[in-house]
Structure formats: structure tokens, C-alpha cells
Image (cartoon, rainbow, N blue to C red; front, side, top):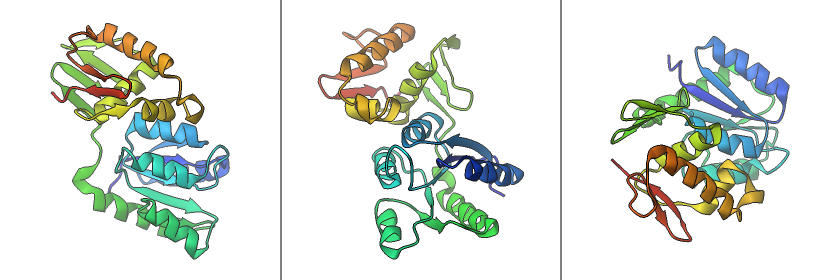
Length: 228
């Protein structure tokens, strides 16, 4: 069994989310939910799920746009669950990076079999639940972080930002990507807002912008977290 893996359900229909939660938890999976594209993208970045179940008909964006956004920074397996049954729609989703496609209404036995297959295929590539970057320890499972063994008191948004940078440690993460993922598409120009959170994170990490230990700035572009 591949139970205890975290599954994120992004679907605007609460009854579908409840139905899937009951079935998945009965199989031993951990389940998270999101009802909008914005919530789903943020939850993917924050929780690093083992697999995402994605509906295409979301209220604030098309599911294909959500898929393309996630694919920009995460290899997490995505299982599309949609009422769209046309071949062109399926091909578009698979070409955009989905691993599988299930049409509503669906049989739970087949759905679970497909889900297990995707988790097996991913195997050892599953996203880590915790990261260590030098003396900095970040645990996504309980949304906590510590430095030199001492807890860091981070707000939820500060933790989400730190985890997103940590998930791409050693690589540049653009301001636009951070703002769109954590605050939504309407905030992609709010770079000053992001700078405030970066400054708060640096203060709590004991980091200095002029001689950074953890968070490095690429002026006008984005941020990069140290690799080790």
C-alpha cells in the first residue's frame, strides 16, 4: 500500500472533495483540499503533496492554467478529474503535464488504481517532508522551522514563502512566481509587498541583505535560498 502519502484535491465541488476524502482516508492517505485555483497553487507549494487531483472547471481559473503554473516549479504527479470527456481536452491536459485523466462520473476502484499507479511510478522522487539547509531545518508536515535547534516563530505566510524558496534551494525563484503562487495572479506586480515579507524572514533568520547567509537577492528578478 502507498498509504500515508499526502493527496491534494483541487476541486470547487465540496461534495466531490468530501467523497474523495472519505475514500482516500479509508485507504490510509493524508488528504488536503482546495476549492479554487489560487488556493490549490498555494497548497501545492506549501504542502508538497505526493499527488494532486485537479479539476479543470475551477471558479477563478481554468485547471489547465493551474497545471501549467505548477509544472513551472514542481514535478508532482497530477491526476485530472473532470467532466470534460472530449479527446482534445484530454490531449491538452496530458500535453500540459498531467500524468493521467479520469472523467466524471467515475468508479472509485478505477480511480484508486490509477492513483496507486502514479504514486508507484513516482517512487523515490516524492517531495521531501523536511529539508535541512545548514543549521536551518524546515518541516512542511507541521509547518515549523528551526535554526541551530531553536524554533523560529514564523507566520503562516512567512513559512509558505520560506518553504517555496527551500523547495527550489540553489535556484532562482522569480518575484512573479512567488507572488502568483502565494498571493494570486492579481498580485504579480506587488513586489514591494514581497520585499516586506523577505525582510521579515531575514530578520528572523538573522540574515543581512548586504551579506546574506540564507536568502540571496537577484535585483529586480527574484530570490534564491542557499543550497547548504
